[in-house]
Length: 72
Image (tube, rainbow, N blue to C red):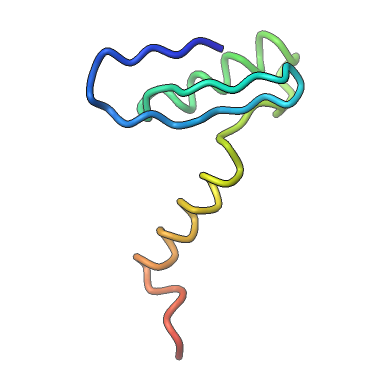
C-alpha cells in the first residue's frame, strides 16, 4: 500500500494483517486503496481494512450523532 497526502485532507490508517503492513491514506482514497490492495495482492479477499479501532470509533460517533445511543 502507498500513502500520499499533499493536502490538508485527513488521513485514515489502513492495516493489512496478511502483509503485516500499515499505512495512512487520504480519507477520500480509503475505499479505492483498500479495494485495489485486496484485489491485487489478496485475490479480492477482504484482508486489508481501516484500522478496526478507528472503524469502531467512527461507528460510535455516527451512532451518537444519529441519537442511537440516547437513553430512552
